[in-house]
Image (cartoon, rainbow, N blue to C red; front, top):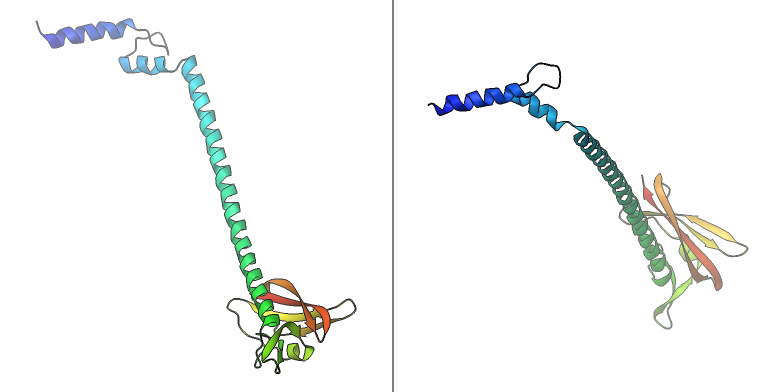
Amino acid sequence: MNITNEFSKHSKSWNEQRPCLCDSRKCNAFTWTYFTIINSRGIIFSLDAGISFTITLVMTLLFATVLAQNAFSTETEIKNFELEEKAMLIVDSLVKNYDENNTLLGACILDIDKKRIKTNETSILNLNNAKPIPFGEIYVESITLKTNYLQKTFQIETRMSTQCINVKRFALIDGEKRVIEVKTCTPQ
């Protein structure tokens, strides 16, 4: 007796006993297996898995969008912070240093008797001699002196700018308490 014939005989009779779901004809083993997988529990599981996959995909896309927006806003905040920091350094240099060539680097009054500079004290004449100097990516557009009744602006440099910031500093100017406002900008 041949084992292969016995196996094929058994499998034929087994295939012929199963009814086909699509019509009244007999089905082969592949069709029977295929149609028995899709039942009510399988369809519900497939729908549930599809819905959960879609929700996960949408949540991932929302997370990526929020992450990109945060990265962009952080980048602009860092640029603003760097501009403000450099502007504050320029204003501090203006009221705490002395430079006879360019008062934009230092406009304090020089006390010859004591051989030192008077910090936070300057004069309008010193500020009037300010010349434009490149400070890397920023430049000083104007210096404004303010009191309750007076406002005087010294225009230093005019260019097309993308972003400007004003930094204020309190100082004694010609013996009066005034606010020095320095406008720094980034060129276009």
